[in-house]
Amino acid sequence: MKIPQILAFFFTCVFCFSSQAQKIDFDKYEYILIPITFGYMLEENEHQVSSLTRFLFKQEGFEVYMTEETLPFDLVENPCKALKVSLEKENLVLKIGMVLKLIDCYGKVVYQTPRVSSSLKESKPAHQEVVRKAFAYIEEMGFERALMGQTNKKVFEAPEILTYEEEQARKVQRLLNDGEIYVHERDSILVYKVENEIEIHEANAKSLITRLSKISKSTYLYNHKDFNGILTFLDEEDTLEIIYMNSETNSEVKKVYTKK
Image (cartoon, rainbow, N blue to C red; front, side, top):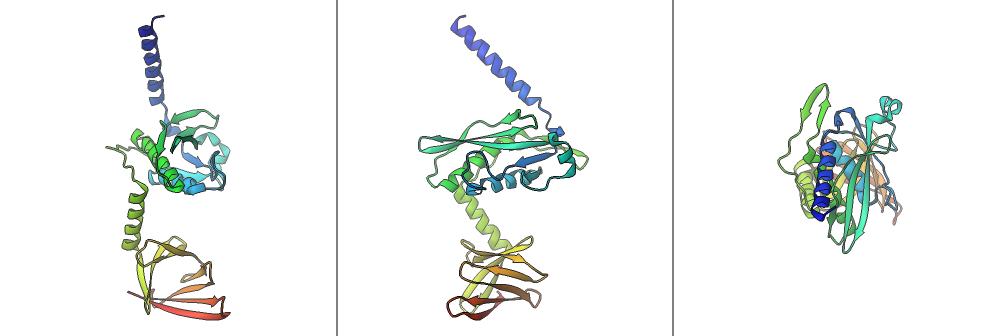
């Protein structure tokens, strides 16, 4: 067989494969499963990649579960209702590569993104950047999905891929917009509510101080590397009171902050 014929045969096969891939019926899948630890990871949720992947799929309207969570009864009864996410990492010269795959209950790859890469030097931003780049291909497909009895098709003009710096800038702006500033003498903090937790940030929102767990309607458990205590909202949240034990003096400290 001559070279032109070989090339023609090759591109014909590629076209046929691509055509078949477009015929995949994603409506029959109701759930996305994400492992807390992908195969290449040395620890759970390394670089917060698993939680970022979960966030991206949920943001696009998918019903997502971590594989370690308690799964819905219908999914336990029929595992084929879910697609499992797989991330395969490649260590390249001066950068990392990543391929995102969607795998059915039989272990068959039903969709695979092209390889994406990041040249960022810091490991966490680099890993999160390749995940976002890979997910952009999921967005581009514009899955036709039946949600709450209605079929909706998402149309994307172009995927938005943010750098780590842009993502951080958006996070800071969100905290400044949605958080509240409280002041005690010369000390200012930003308080941001997240479901059954609150986050305490520096007033400029650029550094997280600690997270607090809700234990009653207005009281939160205050866990910090240097001290433990409780935080209580008073006066319809115009005031907050922090009480903790000072480990150096072994005495109780009380601070009252007023909403700015």
